[in-house]
Image (cartoon, rainbow, N blue to C red; front, side, top):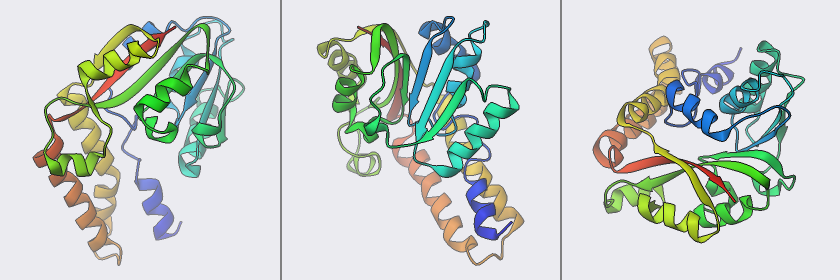
Length: 244
């Protein structure tokens, strides 16, 4: 394996989820989604689809099916491997496609941390309404401001982020019913940021003299500084189970 390939695989190696989430919290969200026999699940911006795989597995009859949609080749390959390892490769398919191009409705739709791929929070909530079948549910994960952000925090995170009450009211104004709401706690956030760094931190410890090491070290140090000094406890993440 080349150094570049090794570094690419290290990027998410320490992560179960590419979102601030614990297994206990994930179990709660899946319970609130109400996965039943025969449901069709679509995950837009799925990454390697850990929550999608668990959603399909939640149906004890083995008749639920799922599709993960993303543009990241490495993440999709990891998802296919995970599906095969769990004997879910006949139930779950991973497709390389822009989330914004997906048009097929499903009983359960997951969109976690991918609203940017659909034009931002408001545009995502509007377009996702066309993808949830009548009586279905949407699990929507999106960022919000826990506290008023500094200029630096806004520059790092980007525009269009709402406070939590505004996010809830905006979803309601677009015709969604809020069936469940919860937010990532501080431990989930700290674990997410730590594991986002962990694979490449380990790579640096193995290869301190590699030509790419200095640049990577600087990149990871900037991310850690920004998290602990700028947006920790300021930028939050909400999980909403929505119906219409």
